[in-house]
Figure 1 (cartoon, rainbow, N blue to C red):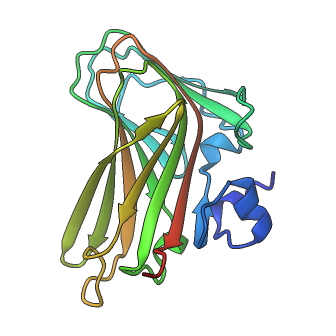
Figure 2: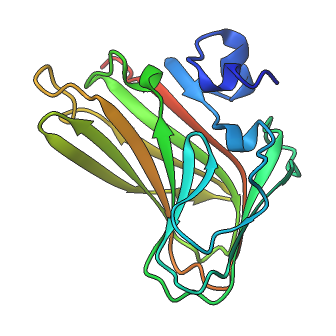
Length: 205
């Protein structure tokens, strides 16, 4: 897979098929952590933040350093990703463990209230683990946050952010990112087989 292509706007049919994009998608992306070898991995995330790739950073507040991050060859048949990203957590004395995925400028150009931002997560973890997503929309007037829960369907989890009421002519978004937070990660092995983001237009009513 072309390393540059996955980081730029994807509007071709081939790109959308590769990422299994929903209908009316006008932008989609798979971060490089799942498509290109990362020379910084494996790594021990004893400190925070821990950069994984150009658009993905791990944050936590655990002082023990019992967190290991590794990139391995993809092991799941239901994804076109080249790599898995695994996070292994030992004893955890922090209050949060979160992946921050920064959306590129292509994702917010011409962003409007008619758009829905969607994130798909293919993950192996304990069924009891809750995974939350927080969309951050930064504009001159401040930063808005929309919080959703990744709803589990087997190991595939999906979250949608409807931008109705959050993006207006007077509120132009100049930066956006998604926090993916893992609840109660102690002694957990989290394997992220894929993470993809999509921008699509709401269906006409």
